[in-house]
Length: 447
Image 1 (tube, helix red, strand yellow):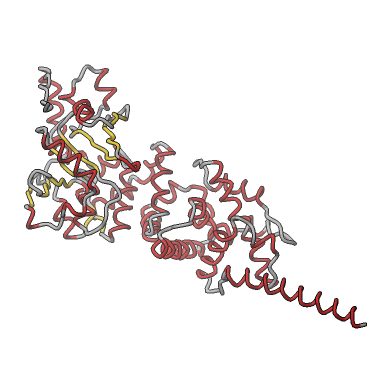
Image 2: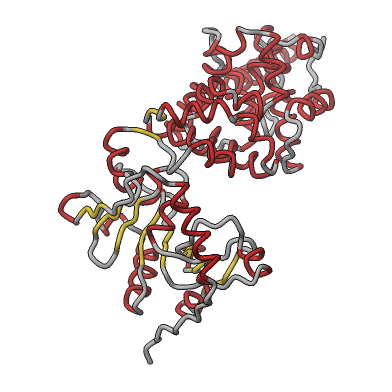
């Protein structure tokens, strides 16, 4: 039995439609709206590089008479020759129609409804309906008496809703072409990060887009368009209007990305760092040299990520790397120096709460962060004395703490400490003690 596409009931609300059209026209005036169609022979995207689960969703939508496009960052990454982390799909099918097509799926989201399609192994493909540029979310539109025709739109309208031109590209599974309404292909070729439409209006409406523009510039090595950059610098303080957990989740991705040094430079130059990290900014102002130490520290962390893929490194390690170069040179940190080996975890925990205010983290991550930072004192004391106590190097967090210590040592051009050398020296001392006790026992017997 084949699924037949149901007819959509339309409302005769011409006033609302006209307002939406006027808003669209005003927001994107002066832009080339396209579309530019790039046929299969003229681009490098191959179905071999697309997840088989994403292809299944695309083909099922197409076979049932719906438009089915690969959208957003996945198209951008494929055109740049990278492997996308996620494959998101756009379609003209409503969430209810998508839900009926896929047995193992669920409609999620209260503000903006979309569908998660589930596959074996925990794989999830996100499918969203093309939307119009409308100020209201789904709940608000429903309260205003607006139907789906006022919320959902065409691929062109959906493309203009997106943040950056390089993220506004579509891959059409029907003929394997790339569809460009917003000039994204030219910006990819030129290496430019540019907002779709007026950047000031875009950033005022959703300030998190400023962080995303900087993220893509850091990861791709592209240059931020001058008008876009000026808008970021002008409206950096607007980031405070966003939900704190949302901002936290955004910058946590960036410090783990392997491009955190470039990201940090953009954040400092634009003024976003000051607005997002007020606690860290206070430490940075007191010691100007610590800025360069911080940048070099993040460069070392990026090397670790690119070499090992961040395996074995927790979120707490990256948080510690962000704060330790600034904390290390502060009087508050030097005041915590113990006379003998101990972990000032309680004092460090209090410092962390003030430095990372207003952000909150999981209790386990917060505790591990305090342990990693407080472990720097026992490590430095053992390194100075040249003697390593077993209770120091057998601690569960020691390897990560030593990695953090070595990163700052590299930044300061000081010698590093290898874990194998520490463990080896400890075993050697143990063997020497056994030899000495055997010699003493033999002397007693002979005497």
